Image 1 (spheres, rainbow, N blue to C red):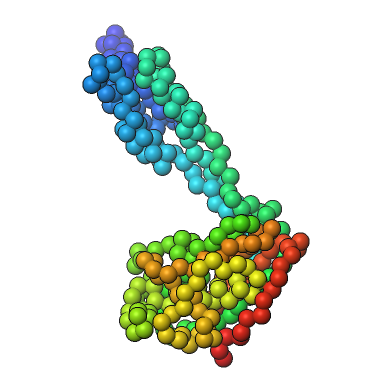
Image 2 (cartoon, helix red, strand yellow):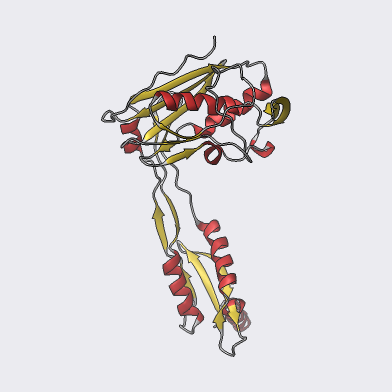
Length: 293
């Protein structure tokens, strides 16, 4: 029995943090243990915090414990899927506690100071701005061309449910992101310097062109638009908007005093893009030419 007591005591001593160590805790659960010497610079004879190592550690810890907030969105039937509230580390509070520990304050544990991260678009806002359609445009494509159809669907999904706030400028390249095979984009026909070629993401210019015409029909301000070097079949001449990750972009500015909701989807052989806002919006629609039959 005495031997068991001695063994238990030794185990407790071995598990106890050293004076140099600090256990990081979240919601009562240990996350990691750090040591003062791992963040120290002694070149001056006085221990100083290695800020580069601290920043790297903080970013790694933030990614490990944070939960992402998610905007409220509309499903295909127009029903609202509620937002999700997230959380992340309060950097200022954490830094202050870390410096207290580093410069000699006796601490064995640090409970992570967290704060709530609210989404940009909640159910209340979405319910308000989904009520009035202010713009619309529809183009057609060949669903038998599987690769091009896949690219159109992916790009349309990327801009679907995006909300452009008053004064904000929408960038197609920024919102859709780089078109890569890892994201599911496939090689399909593109126009390069007036000639046809194949590249990852071929076909997404139909999405940017359809969006341009929907945006123009709503009277929004076009900030940046470029046409292809040759005519494209799915849109009237001069009404296209070519995009490329390392080249042209399509941008528009919300010059109204209400947020604008983009709804984009593929239905069979059709690409449908609609713009919505609140009932109180005062907008000036424009007439745009119909797409080819």
